[in-house]
Length: 338
Image (tube, rainbow, N blue to C red; front, top):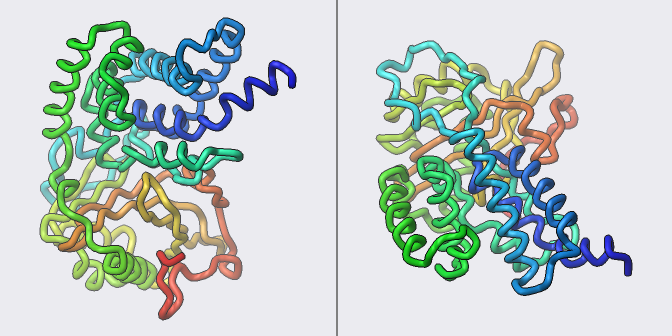
């Protein structure tokens, strides 16, 4: 076995969980991919000096965390619209995009299971990638993010985290307390609400998908909680309350039955929808990735990432001909089954 083959065998199975780790730190799947590449490049360059005093996994996490800390210092945080100000006072405000803002991005679950990925590593990867959690992490400093992720998500001992960050166990525990307190303030209230049982959640999501494809605003409104929230990055405005959310959605999204077609995807460990929009050329073009938050009382939050470039991350094409795009939901068949 060559040195290159030995390196690939030892390190390759950790790629998915390192990608998830970098995503938690940065809030961008694209940046996470770049930083994992940088991690492996640095690991390869220093492989001859790796003496095995720690596990390969720990060694790679040390490199990846330091790469992320440097990146955060250069780029700052990635917010959602709700992280930049209060909700719009009227559902009729102009929907102005702010492409210059480095917005938080979703994460395709399919990225976690690379070739030869250890099933246990995939399980570790899925932990702590819920959108609300990653959004809340953006309010923490770079080192606080690292401490909280390493301690609470990956469950590393405080002494090991201190060694990685070049600090003391006492300092790690102190940073963790501050990070937890700050995170509790930043997490949206609905994230604390219990989710329904899986069959009930699937039924709600089936009705939700049907309401969108049928442009049925009334059916959508019935599924929303009274204090439902709608965010549409890169649009700066966001909306709170069933009436406002329904009004904005009806005016800008649910304009005609059949105008939108949906494809099921998994993002940030939860069901999501890739929305295709019918264009004048007669084809359905990539439009947005929509992530609904389902609670026992209904859909509490919708985050629609209006960015067709995200579709490649989910392995989806930029457009479909109508004949190629199957309905998201056939009568009697759950969109979320299987």
